[in-house]
Image (cartoon, rainbow, N blue to C red):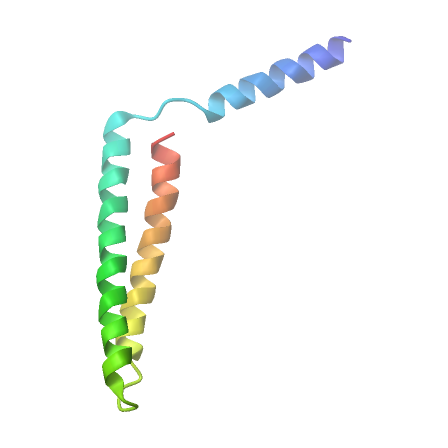
Amino acid sequence: MHKCVLVFTLAISLCHTGFANADPSECREATVRYNRATKEISEYLRIYTDCVWSSRGRNDCSSEFSSLEDAQHDFEKAVSRYRKDCR
């Protein structure tokens, strides 16, 4: 019984630590980064799509796709940061 209480207490304390409130300034910054990343994704997706539709086999649009990939990586980082800072 004592072991069960100890394990339960440890589990509760770990859960409580995982849901601690974030620093509001860090959350604001993470939100700004997230919003900027979503705008960049939208913009680079539009640029890439325009390139593909207008290429007519003359342009492989690799430069535009590379920019879109970079924006995706930034978006992934922004989501991760948002999850961490805005609990």
